[in-house]
Length: 87
Image (tube, rainbow, N blue to C red):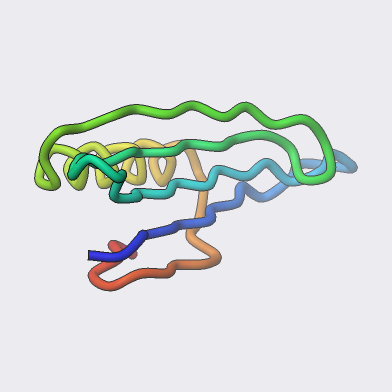
């Protein structure tokens, strides 16, 4: 399985810059998986977090849960990449 990537944005209110969340699920060199979450304001600072998983199934479940949480917060998917990438 290749890397999966979702880019999500939240509609800005007033003059503020839009917020974004990027989720990436990547295989590591030791047979595990890494979930990378980047969030912030477009054109501003961002925060990067990594979470390691031993099994693909648990990594994919965490990817989907993170996506669903962001959708619940008003973010919309603007870009999706990878085989089987959830939309």
